[in-house]
Image 1 (cartoon, helix red, strand yellow):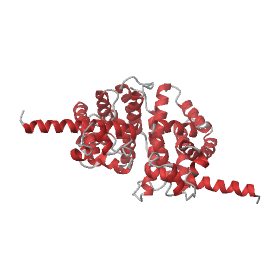
Image 2 (image 1 turned 60 degrees about the vertical axis):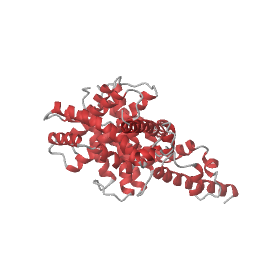
Image 3 (image 1 turned 60 degrees about the horizontal axis):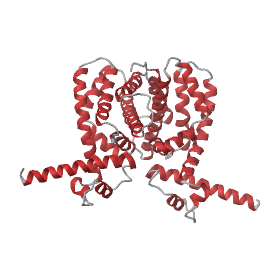
Image 4 (image 1 turned 30 degrees about the vertical axis):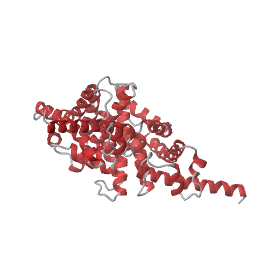
Length: 213
Length: 213
C-alpha cells in the first residue's frame, strides 16, 4: 500500500467513525444540543476539531449523514419501482414511498438511529429544507409521478398537501418504532415489514380520500 | 381591594406572564435549549428564580402551559360533540378530533406558538407522555368511542395504530401551518377552517382504509 492510499483510507475510516457517532448523538440528545467538539471527542479523535477538518460546518456534517442513508434508500426504491412498472393501483405507489425506508431501517439492525435523526430534521424549518434537498432524488419523483397518474382528478394543492402529510406521517411513525425498539418497549407489529404494511394501508386511504373540504 | 387579594392577583399576573413568555421561547428556541432562568429574565421578573417559585420544575411549567390550552380545546370539543350526537359518519368524529385544535389556534390569532410547542413535546419520548396525560380528557375519549362505533370491525391494534397516526399527523401539520403564518410564508389554505377541512378529508380516508397488511 502506498503512503498516499494509506492516508486516504485512514481519512475514510475517520470520516465513517465521525458519521456513526454523530448520528447516534444527534438522535439521542438532539441536533442542537450536540457540538462538533463533543462529536470529535466521542469519536475518539485526538483532535477536537476533527469534525471541522473532515466535514466543515455542522450543516455539512448533517448533509453527509443524510447522504449516506439516502443513497441506499434510493437504491432500494429503484429496485421496487422496476417491479411496480406502470401499476394503476395507488397502494403500489404508496408502497414505493414507504418500503424503501422501512427496509433500510430493517437492514441497519437494532438499535438504529437514523429514523430519530431524520424526525428531528423534519421538525426544524431550516434543517427540513436541507433534508428534502438531500433526500429528494429521481426515484421519489418517479414514485410521485406514478401516484399522480392514478389520481388524475386530485387538485394540485391537495396533492402537495397530502404529499406533505405522507412525509410527516412516515418520518415520525418510523422514528416511533425505532425508539420503541431501542428502548425494548413492546411493539404491536413484530417486524418492520409488518409495520410498513399498516402504514401503507393508512397512507393509501389518505390519498384515496375524496376532497370534501 | 384587600392586601391579600392584591397579592394574589399580582401573583396571577406574574404566572400568566411567565406562561406566555415560556411558550414563545420554547416554540422558537426549543424546550431543551431554554432554561428557567432565561424565562424568568425574559418575563422581566426581577427574581431569576421566578419560574421555580411560581411553578416548580420545568416539567411543572410545561404541564401548566399544556393545561391552559387543553382546557379551552376541551371546551370547544364538548360543544362540537353535542352537535355530533350519535352520527354514523366517520368524518363527523374525525372533525371532533381536528376542529377543536384548529379553532383554538384560530382564536389565538397570529403569531401563535402553541402548535409548535406541542409538536416538540410529541417528538420527545418523555414529554410526550406528559402531553398525553394532560391533554387526554373525557371529550377525546368520547370522540374515540364515537369513531369506534362507526368502525366496529377494525382490530384493536389497528385502532391504536391509527389513533397514533392521527395524533402525529395533526400535531405536526398544525405546527407547520402555525410556522408558515409566523414566517409570513405563503399558505395554500387561506384559513384555519379550510386547512382543517383538508386534514379531516385525509384523516377520514386513513380511518376508512381497509386492512390489507
